[in-house]
Image (cartoon, rainbow, N blue to C red):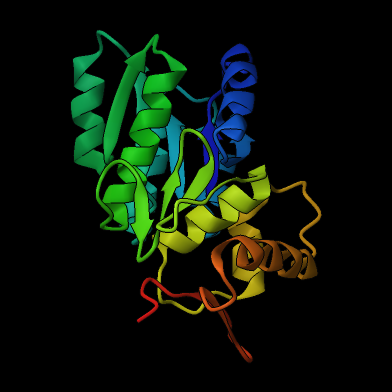
Length: 222
């Protein structure tokens, strides 16, 4: 999953970005409201973490402009803990959740995961499909046979995206956009390598190739 972290506090960004990446997220960063609004309209992000006190354009204005143009990207706003009016303004502008500063990164990560599950109508906790479950904290997948596999970061990102978009054709380009960051080499052929690795663990029939469309993750095998 690919996140847009919008925050002008460089120290906070330097702390959060590697922690989010360790939890299996691709993270792009913007430090001002004008750039953030542009990037958020690119339709390549699964969620935005939006600070309200931004230079050039306020976070509230960015959020209002997104919603005005039917951009439904899920948004967690960051506010000063005592600024209750900012939280109200944020929800009225279309925010999905908020977190007051200062905060623990573990809480932010938990809120990100909960919001992504909710947006994709998946129950909280483990992501599951017929015959397997994905442990997001351990970045491992367990099969009903009892076999458990620890995943590489890219395998984990890819499988989580499949599980949040089951039974839908996903092109290699779409998968690349949601698995890698802006400055990464998005060679779509690399996706084939990781799909093959997942098939080796999950079984060849779990991820179906659709000619001219890409891949379909089958939520049920029967």
